[in-house]
Image 1 (cartoon, helix red, strand yellow):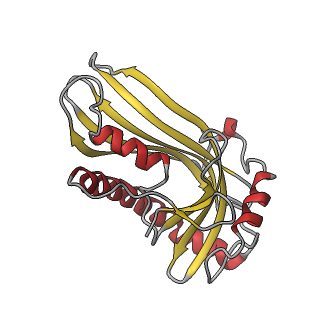
Image 2 (cartoon, rainbow, N blue to C red):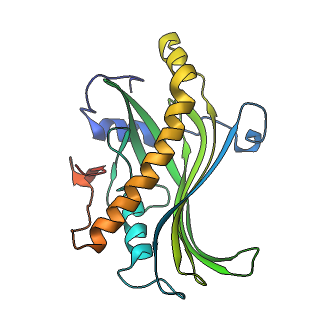
Length: 228
């Protein structure tokens, strides 16, 4: 799998098969050390009545979109994966975009979150989401968590992004220099963009538009998200 392209992935089946054989490109025990970034972003998605999530409400819609990776800005990042694979353990080929360049990067979903948490102020939060870890050939190292959160006392629904990351070893000196200069800026831009995109898509579905779903690209059950 090449580390940089000028065109979209031409053989997703081969690239996903390669990703399936890759291991993590970092040791999770080292993420508290020097050179690691720890990020956290909360973004409002809507308000429901207090209590459990409402059927067809912002929380439920957002969970479905996050499950399908239908919250990303496709001009920054898209993903290829097997739609029939269980979410936990799913291998994903992320394709980052910067100007005319495309960077394929493998990740693996390591955890699905489905729980109720107690806040410090005594309120409960209903939480659903998942996290992935980076694999070999990725430009970064680390773990990213996406969660849809409802405060059952206030009814407030939010998107929570939590990440720990650092720059991976990049053999290509040109790519390494570009990532050193633009990587952190692009990463923060990505966080803001996906949060805004999820809010926009939740609002669109609530207003009556069909919920977007990943586009089949084949062969078999391989899909690309977000859909156009």
